[in-house]
Length: 74
Image 1 (cartoon, one colour):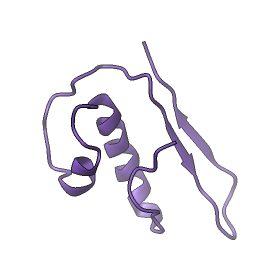
Image 2 (image 1 turned 135 degrees about the vertical axis):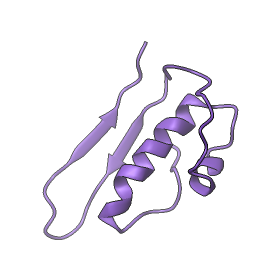
Image 3 (image 1 turned 90 degrees about the horizontal axis):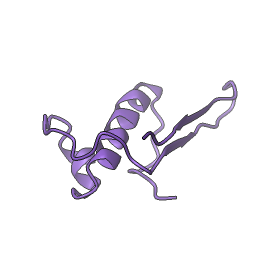
């Protein structure tokens, strides 16, 4: 497991973080930190699918249980 950026505490940032984590795993030749700094890139993905996956852990008082896994495709 490799963390993608620092822990976020703002729920409004979750969608964007997932989107850029997906871009990062589809472009393994580029350092993932690129996607945390420059979210305006329109580069074409190096791969259509990845063997990697995205797993999100959400926790906190008053939150509903939620699991999200972006499975690899072929």
